Amino acid sequence: MNHWVIYLDNNSDKKGFIKDFQRGIIPLDLKEFNDKTGSLFSAFTLDKLIDEEDKHDRKIISSEHQALETMSSGEQKRALLHYLLSEKPDFIILDNPFDNLDIEFQEALKTILKDHSKHISFIQLASRKSDTLSFINCFGNLNKNIFAITESTSSNDYEIHSAFNAVSIPQSNTTYPNIESPLIDFKNVSISYGNKKILNAINWTVKKGDFWQLSGTNGSGKSTILSMIFGDNPKAFGQEIYLFGNKKGSGESVWDIKQKIGYYAPAMTLKFNGKHSIENMLISGLNDSVGLYTIPTELQKRVIKQWLLLLDLYPIKNKYFNTLSTGQQRLVMTARAMVKRPPILILDEPTAGMDDESASLLVSLVNKFANETDTAIIFVSHRKEKGLKPKQTLDLIPSEHGSSGIFK
Ligand SMILES: Nc1ncnc2c1ncn2[C@@H]1O[C@H](COP(=O)(O)OP(=O)(O)OP(=O)(O)O)[C@@H](O)[C@H]1O
Image (cartoon, rainbow, N blue to C red):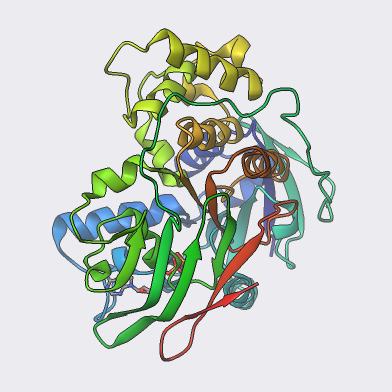
């Protein structure tokens, strides 16, 4: 039985390839899949299922106890795989299956896939060569929408970039009066959902200029922590959580808090599918808006020009953001979260789904933020991202009493 890996890079038209495949427009080399039934294991399928469950108020893969939407990424992927396998397709396309998964769950997923590889073919779409499944026996790559067979490849060791050296991180004209340090202070924070204990007595202080990696296995509570800082998770109220010196829930609106935090998670990119130029995308970061509703000032334009030069995008500043490669889009979005030089920058799994080269570029940019500014950075990731230089790590270690925090 054949199992394929198809390597993706910044030029790959993955969406187009998947769409064509589903419509039966299949490259000649893969014609063994003609007239076979296939399923798609991807973030896109999950979003569709969540939407459908929501709209029709019915469980498709939610369990008795929990809605799909509230599950952690690992739990969602486990539920999705279980559901797809139960439908017994001839093949499953695995779209970057290990994104957002911790090592432990990656291993569990590899075992499940290997067990099923005896009777189901897998087509793995992989941005990282090191993710290649052990039982893969056919290799290809995708350049734009052209598929080609390649030699079997062992994982590549990507050179870490030290790009962005020519220009310093630009200043901003946004000011933040009365910012108290510590910026974030969790005192003995414990959170449960019903009987399920999620966080157990977390004590965590983030100060000006800190560079944290927040890590932990799937379901350990990383998003829960972020939602208590950046979101309006009602579980935060009644806890001893201080943001910029104020107790959470004591008057400051979520909007007040969001103004002082730059935030980027890859899912946000989908919101920007209109016709926004790269320049306007960055300018809109100064105003925290999706589009550009006010005419930018000369000063704002000057600041953004520096950012465009830094990112080496100045010559194409008028190009539409949605025509850029995934890697370039991520760089722009990460910079966009930083243009107002916020006291806190949160990057939530920013390298998920990126190829090795673009991930190393993004890592370089984030290291530069840390070196040249006093913004406190919180980088959430399961991967030990090669080249990333956080000064401290908060690792969430789950137990039946909820996750406790270990500092490294
Ligand atoms: N509204 C909710 N109701 C019930 N359980 C919830 C709810 N929100 C989160 N959980 C549970 O809390 C636990 C922690 O979830 P969280 O999303 O914070 O983990 P995570 O570390 O971010 O995981 P991942 O890396 O997989 O995204 C999970 O077991 C999740 O199912």
